[in-house]
Image (cartoon, rainbow, N blue to C red; front, side, top):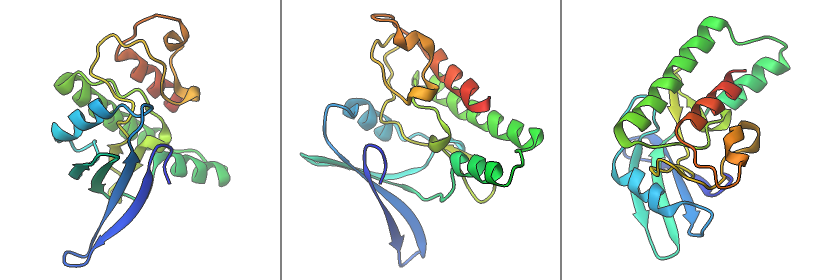
Length: 178
């Protein structure tokens, strides 16, 4: 179960592949318009999760996407438990891939993710980064609303009636790197 959705692991028996089915109940907290727009724009970048299908009903949004079973949060936890650190070289590769994905989102769609955090960074078996979870994303270039995960939110989001821009994602990445 995710924060804003129920998540199912789906197996395609014919192709012997796994996918994730993410089921969102429609409600105001989720930015349905932007979520729908993003899916329909068919994001296509090596560092963004692949969306296979999207279905919208009266009460639900269903998103079928590629399955990746590891995220940056788990990797950080694993290293922490074993009292070791991710090497600077490996960290630099992850950071470069996250930046490439964020740059693609902004340059191509003027999209602000607004929830960059380790749990939203998947890592596939080839050590490639995939950015996920676009529920809080927006193409509004001067939004006012506060959203995201508290530990990663940029300070400007706390100022009342203060518009912000894509730089809040850069702040979140900085917190993640720290």
